[in-house]
Every structure is written in C-alpha cells, then in structure tokens.
Length: 344
Image (cartoon, rainbow, N blue to C red; front, side):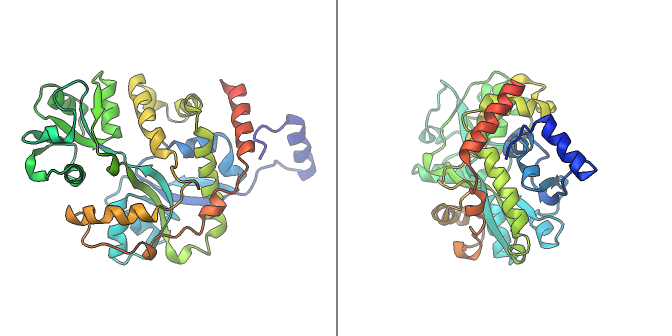
C-alpha cells in the first residue's frame, strides 16, 4: 500500500476510468462500547493511514448505548463483529450463543487497584481492615481476585460503590474515605487530569487478560472470511503503526475525536493508559491466549461472574490470525514516516 499517491497518477487513473477512482468498499458492521475514541485508537490510526479503505472495507460502528447484550447483534446478523470482555464472552458461550472469539483487541486488563502515590497504602496487604471504593459493583469481582492473589480475602475489607463521577472519586480518595479505588484506566485518567497522583498496586498476575476481544457468529466464519481478514489486517496495521509513535497517534486523535482532548491532561492521561492495552503482547498481533483464558476462569467462577468453566476449544478460533498479520512491516514504517512528514 502506498498511502500518499501522486496527483498525476491519480488523475491518469480517473481519465482512464472515465469517472472518479472511488472504490467499492465492503461495510463491516461492528458494535463496541464507544464511538471512535482514544480507547480503541487502532481504528482511528488505521483509517488515518488509509488501511481499511486499502483493504476494501469501511467500518460502520453501531450505536453502543443499548441495554441489549452486544452478542445479540452478531446472533441476529446486525453486526459482523462485537467487542466483548472476558465475562461477556464466557457468559454468552455458556448460554449457547454460538459465537467464536477470533481476535484479542486488548491483552492487558484495563482494571486495577489504585492508591494515592506516596500515601499510607502501598500494597494490597495494606488494605486489610480499610474501606475500598468500587467505581461500579462489577469491580468487586476484580478486587476479590486481587486480594486473593496476594493471600487475602474480600472479607478483609469493606467496600462502597462510588460511581463514575470524577469529583466523587477524587473526594473519596483524597479525604481518606477510601484507602483505594478498584476501577479502570478510564477512571485514573479522570483523577490524574484533576492533578491527583496515583499508584497502581494491582497484582502482576491479574494484568494479563483478554480484556476486549472480537467475537462473531461461528456460522459466519467462512462466509465472512474475506471481509473479516481484511478488517483485522487493517486493525493490526493500526496497532503496529502506533508502536513508538505516541505523538503521531495523539495528532490523529486530536483531529478525529477532538472532544476527548478538550481537557488536555485528561486526553493525555487516557492515551498513556490505553496504549499498552492496545499493543499486543503475543508474537502474532491479536492472537488468542489459550492459557490465559484457562487461567482466568477459576477466579471468575469463584467471584460469581460466571457459573462454570468452559473449555477454550469451544469458542477460541484463530483461523483469521495469520491473515491479520500478513502485511509488510517495512511498508507500514514507510507510511508512518510519510504521514509524519506531511502532518507533523
């Protein structure tokens, strides 16, 4: 792919065709928790560098503000792909939804346990006998797992649900109403934007997690192969192009989602938080970590998040992964250099 084509070459093609050089694109319908956002920046990067169009696809994000489980959209054919977290995935498989997980979007957990930097609490063991804040009730399961991983128990602490309001979270931790907050990178971005310095004390073994993945109707794996491989290859290029180019990613995001950069510190904090989450840790970008999926299930069962464990062979399907990684890294490097020269 040569992103920056010459004007002369483009004009020549137009004359030969007798019309414009517009390409017919296959629409890939996807539902995920947010519209175009810093959180899932490989989509923005891939579009800015022309990779989705170059692969012959365009991405249509379905409205995400729905109470209907995302998996229902791939079951009824409205969505080709749904972005699901690990609990949503396993719950759907247990319910017999007939889905396959085909790509790991994020391989590091967004969740964590945060304390004030330089404060009285510096390790999970220090939280015993204190009150820990939960951003939502769902964070209780992660807190329980974090305490268990360090030899503790959820019974060692008191918990209170604080909600997502930035001022409420800030007041709770700065006034000492809570010793720590169990939440996610999005919550930390809000607090850090307010000038509150945090330290994460999350046990290392909880950091590896298929936090967000692409799932699709298993019956559509073959019929949708061409479009899905093209989409995932473009997404992978977006991931690869971003590595070591945070300033380029920031520039693209400022143009694509300016509303997320109205508060400068919040935008930067969010980008800093999500960059390692969106960078694959496996040799093949987006690969499926069968061992991690097996390891996380016992704690999800013990916390009540899922009712039973599921053999990973029932839902993990890496049939697209080779194609998703079938691109020339040197060519992407050249595209990045060209974009930077033209835009920065």
